[in-house]
Image (cartoon, rainbow, N blue to C red):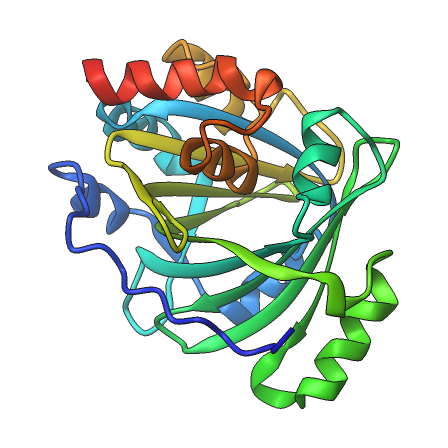
Length: 264
């Protein structure tokens, strides 16, 4: 496997809610260097799926409690990802079958900064997510391959690129708690045969050292009747692009997404 980034052209069909950027500009800014104090590489994740027409109300409610990541005057960032798996989808089926101590592996480009990381995510049997990564820009292919072999139970030679995912994201940091949140819009899944767009679905992910229901974002989501709903972008994208694959565990989430995309 070659550890280079496979360029994904960002979709020209993106949809941004009216007034969303205006609201984002009202948040106090935090720099990337300041945000390093809240890396949360060993964390508990809470995920939510919601329609984009509820986003402005959510942002208005949490405005006093969070700062927003700003890089070179940008607050809405573009992400491009290549996800890797074995030819028989071992990582996908580990998640589908509810196996703990499971892995995901991707190459991610932060489009605005042109930085590229190889990242490995590990979910342990205590449902904590640990992420390790290496900066591709500063390492050789051999060093990246060594990193993957050190942190994955499957050698890199058995992995192949399975799916590309690009989206836009803004990142929020709680002003008083050890908490970060990412909010993703305009998800675009593609492989060599097919592509699938989600124009109206928003994915919210809250990252905490341990789950804390006192989070202002969690309370605001509850106020707009959005309940936790775990979602792996890799697994959902794979299921959407391969409708003949086993996907029983993901059918409820796919029904929710299809309802959002058709009704809102």
